Length: 397
Length: 144
Image (cartoon, rainbow over all chains, first blue to last red):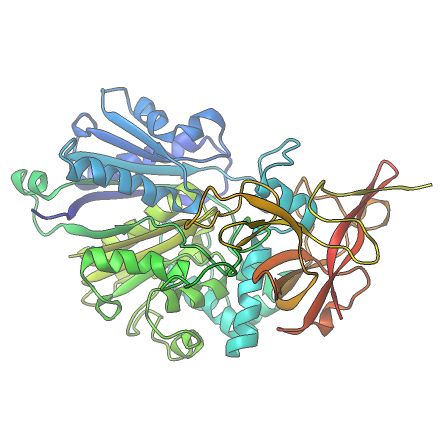
């Protein structure tokens, strides 16, 4: 018996900044995914929502919120919160239902409406909440952590601000032709270098914006897909939602400290970010060199370079060389963020991991238009959610 | 006269001459834990071990740093005079003995342009912000 899922439909609402109700965006994405799959809403047996903390109670119970907005029809439901990884956690939940035989047809959906500026913690006096305390005591915004990693690349591997800028240039070029992208303007190296500094060495254009947006997908068992006449569908081969292994020596949002390496006889075989992709590769039975294109979470430009190494595209310290060779641009050996990435979209947290899968599905179907990667066979998406949520999916033709 | 209070209770000692972070150590594993909240990982080899309170060593090496030029959202309280915002630097320092990286503000008056990876750092106390006539103090990282 195969443990693959069939991806029968994907859909998105464009990313932007309108401040409308997030449900409105999610419904548009859900309708597109249903239409793409040629499946009726009443045939969906399981609804798996990616939650948003910014939209009140309906956002915390996103699965039920969307099931209601589409019209109660008795489907089973789940809601997942895993910050940036929420979309893949929702997919993982749906996959377990399908592979266990409890459902054949599932919808995964996530949507967000974000305020202007930095993502901020929940309001109130929350002195026992590390996410609240990091703002009060340190002013440790999300870009603060991105900047720590970027600074280390510069110090350890000789990365330059121009390298980081080149990621923005590449991704902004990729996103030009993506009708769902929010920012469709090609940026130059100088644009990035001359933008206001946010968290040194990262400028405003090195850091992704926060956006409104929505994405959805319809997945089924392969048996159901085959029995209903679908063929040549994209397959989900591996899903990873791992947490770190102790001790994690890398400082992670929203923490004040890492784990202590004292008192541990042996370190984990690999770091957390490496382990995220490793699990998905093992499940899928593929290797990094098999990957045709990847969507990685470029919260900052520099972070994309980290991911090259964590997903095995190159050895640690060699991401700048890979970037400079052009390998990760469209037309290169392993194009990364053909969608335009977060650089072109901005982050709509519960939708973002699903949006990555929409792009990979279009690539593997050969429907990506001018963004198409020739001969794309295997796609990988990866991200990481606050509080230790890994997220990686491998799809194939 | 200005009243001085720690910006957070129980995270560090307020001995001006030799301040220290207040952490815990697992009595079975010898692992260290900080800050003193539940939101830290236990050592999975001994998740329910007793933890004894210890003062951490106050020296380490600079793991990374950044200077922030935009005012963060609430609950951040601006650091400058009269509640104005001024750029500030956050350091990540790896304690040698406890072998863990701990975030903290760069010491008041220290020059962020002189920071370098691996630099020796030590824990000091300094002002974080003043609110309603009360000065809130915080541990800070100072090059030494």
